[in-house]
Amino acid sequence: MTSTDGLETAPDRAPTALPHLPRQTHTGQRVLLVDDEADVLLGLRRVLESAGYRVTCATSLAQAAATMRRERFQLVLTDLYLGASDLGVQIAEVARERRPHTPVVVLTGRPTFDAAQDALRKNVADMVVKPVDPQALLATCRRVIHDTELARRNAELESVNCVLTTVLPRTIEIKDPTTSGHAARVIGYTDVLAHRCGVAEEDRGSLRLAALLHDIGKIGIPDQILQKPGALTADEFEVIKRHPAMGYEVLAGLDGHDDVRTWVYQHHERWDGKGYPNGLRGEEVALPGRILILAEVYDALAEERSYKPAWPVEKIVALFREQAGKHFDPDLAHLVADGLEKMGGRFFAASQGLLF
Ligand SMILES: [Fe+2]
Image 1 (cartoon, rainbow, N blue to C red):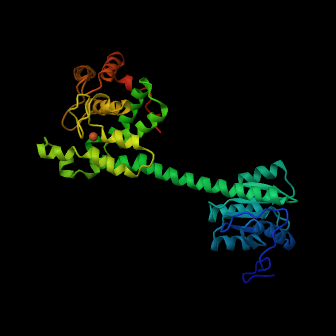
Image 2 (cartoon, rainbow, N blue to C red):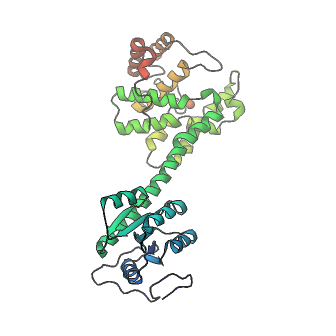
């Protein structure tokens, strides 16, 4: 029969499931089927509908293009040769232009190496050889749709990851311009120390994230305090001291990253219990958290700030030795002091650029 838009379609009644094909559950997944032979179209449509796909048919490049412009499909399944031309590849090109996330599978009776290469270059997801084996066709459709969905979700995750690893830290730096580049450098320092201390790779990944986001709570600190050029009053410092807890709250939705939140919360604690917010002592802060505490201070000392020049290595070494067992884990402080004495700033250079 002919539908209102002139496309060849199967009868409206529910299709009869083919006896050798188990009923699948692909309800809602839409397939655009393109072939210029009505009997082939009907046979393929029955196979696809028996598996639960919703099928729309087209018999030419123009009809396929018009249909793709109007509607969205999970898959386009097209004969390679429509009439005398290899229009299937052109349909793939149209799909790429109009629906770049819609995969195209090509049916061909002449599977040569050159044709396959050409098709794959033209964004064809896969080829199915005619005569079509229904089971193989459905397996290909399932796999291609699944792979495409997976790629789409991965792209979404990458976008979310980009927000986490780029947008949020940039937000902190805009909020507090004195710390430009601070988080990126602290990641490098923590990673070198974590590697030297034998921290497990899984924890190193969490530590890199904690280093990146450790000051995210500054988003909640008023600008006039955060960007105040002179010394802070006691009351203003009390406000600043809220930022680890605010960071902990900001990251509440970070499922599966309790360690990251904890180390962000603890990044101003001290070995001697005189830090904040909770005055934790010694190993009450886990090793990765103690590494972050030290690395964060190292960057503050080694970099020029509006209120001070960059400290020379000798001065930093002296401070780490003096603060071993006070501000810092003593073993860690001496490890860093020893490394800086031997190698200078190169001590921390080993894994720069290998962050995420
Ligand atoms: Fe901080």
